[in-house]
Each structure stands twice: as structure tokens, then as C-alpha cells.
Image (tube, rainbow, N blue to C red):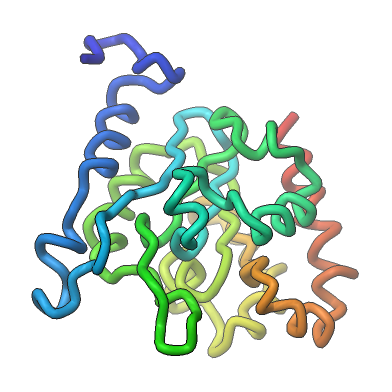
Length: 219
């Protein structure tokens, strides 16, 4: 048990450790799913998050995929490799909780749809946990909103009608002064390879600024 004033052995203060433990123990999507029992998570939940009281950058993704569910390590897949390339950081840096907090909109692998694609993030997570997570990390300066679900929560009515339009408007969100800056990104999944080819401005304009913003905050 963590004593008052002590960290939890992982460098986290007791308040952050308590929140992380509560999230890890959450079974809301199994025991009280949104929409009723017919919509319960079809497998044992395994919430995957990285909370931090020191990181200045929050990676706000969608929901864990199967490999992340199996390993308990966020972005531990090909999407993570592409994201780390976008950020120009090593795996060691990426998983250093003093550098990055990683908190998806849905904490557990949601399963697959009829076409074999990942289902959307569970609807239970954000209403229950998101405000508490953000309140526990007031030092966050930059939110990387990966995908439409993270953009919907972190930008709200400020986002554009489509994910492409939202990402294209990145300069406006980066310069906001009413909280952490938000940089919207497409999901780094291989499924978005075509999108990246159709939108060369992402690599030409947004990626250099993304890398600049990250480098500045990593020190």
C-alpha cells in the first residue's frame, strides 16, 4: 500500500497511483455497459493507460488493439512504430512516463466489427474517467489527439466536420490559449496509408511542426 507522501514504486505520487489503480480495476464495460447487458464487453477487460504527473505531452488515442490488449503496452504494434516515427522518438523515450502520458479514449480493446476492423472506443470510459484523468495531470501542455474520437472530446465544438478537415486546421488548435494546446492527428494505422498519400501536406507541413513541438517539450 502506498503511504501518504510516498510514490508507488513507479515514480508516481499517491494520488496518481490511486487513480491508475482505480482505472486498472474498472469493469464498467463488462458489469454495467452503456446500452444494457446486451452490449457488455465480450472478453475480460484490461484497461491500458500510462498516467504521469511529470509528462508535458499527452497522447490521446482511440482504444487498444488486440496486441496491446495482450501485452498491456500501449501502441505496442505497427501503429505505434509509425507514431514513434512521426514523433521521431525511440521506444525508450515513448514509454518513459516522465516524457509521455498515454491515455486513450477507451481503455480496453473493444473487439472487432463484422468486417474485422476494431470497434469504436467503449462509450463508458470517457464519461467516467476523462475529466478525472485530465484533472490529475495539470502539467500537460500538449495533447496529441489521435483520431476522431480523441478530437471530439479534446476539441469539442471547435473541431471541423470531418477528421481530415480537423487535422488540416491544426494551426488553429495549436495556438489556443484556454488550456493545453491540441494537435490533431490521423490514426497511424496501416488503414490510413491511403489517406497519407492523398494528403501530402500532413508530411510536408504538420509533421515538422509536430516534431518541433515534441522536441521542445522533451528538453
